[in-house]
Length: 247
Image (cartoon, rainbow, N blue to C red; front, side, top):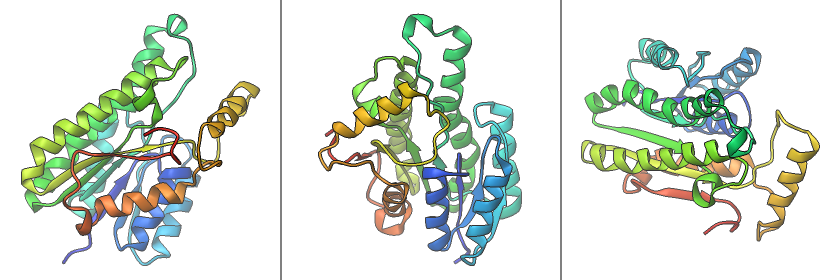
């Protein structure tokens, strides 16, 4: 069987990086996408090739439909098709509802929701042609509980969950499963280390029954099952990995 290929957005660090490395370890060729830090994405690609697979770095803004199409097209031109699509890239600005501008709202929708639409549309034809495919979308506790001060993220992630269920029903009969992963508080590199953001993370850990933040590899381990042949009967589900913070 030809080696399968996985495209992971936001793969330069944290959960995206862990997913890329785990899938490379499992024998998938890997397409590493990031929006800004090419050096980080190149480093992930090198780690993947060290595991004996091929890797491609394709930078771009997945929230831009033209960029999303280009990213997918570059990957398909290299590998023939994308068998596994992992929609991981997201932005999570904290801003009260009445202070969020239309531009800020639309930007969150474009990256956190629309990108999954554009990339799914670009990758599904190849999956259909091969009669096999996996799409995994990332939601989060924002989608499950709602988060005060992050209304745009909550709405976008709810939309991702709806998209997951709709695509699972439409494409499940074609050999393509579509699922979601909802991570809880996960340790990793952060863009925002201001006191309010640090306090928010500390407060989040207090609500986790196991008493700690999760790791990126614990999320990637769940992804491994969803994209495997052993996970073929898991479809239209949201797998919550949060230490019991939400059930």
